[in-house]
Image (tube, rainbow, N blue to C red; front, side):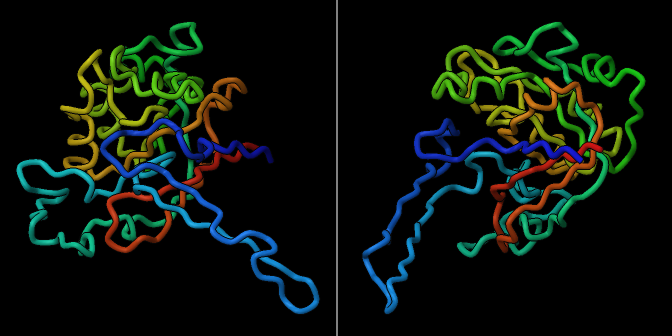
Length: 255
């Protein structure tokens, strides 16, 4: 078996949405601060971060439309300072099943799609080719953008935009009954130049209307370089009761 790690490394200063608390990591106890009898010592750390920072999966509670969550659940009725009584990330069962990688960048003969490019339903259809998509699959969309993660602020695409699925692509994925879907940018969307995250229609279609969880900021370049199109996909969020999302380390396992 070959295992592809589809998570980006988490460190202070990594690119992330400004809408969420930044990742902070500190070593609060160092070796030698306390030494046990016999000479043993231990170090430990503290982490502070938003649940939508780094590679993460969105819970269905993350987005509402006109005050309603997926299934018509009234957001105000289920949210409190303790989180969500319904549709939190703790309701997402660990996924272990078939994954498919639709490499739209390779379809267009490039490693990275240009900023602001909208992935269409036709793109996904062409990238799938003869690959059969089954209900319950995990569908990962390749734009090549994860190759730019190390570029810091430009990864956000604030000025130039970022490539990603548009509404038609989201409807294509929903029509095929995907269990979960993921992509390489901070927001699973096509972001136009200068638009920021003011409008997120793909989140509405997938999370609110279709009930399909979204994985964001994935590292998919390894799959692209290896030409991998299908695999066993493993996705297990932290069991954070009532949370709107969770950091995650997705794995693609290939015989």
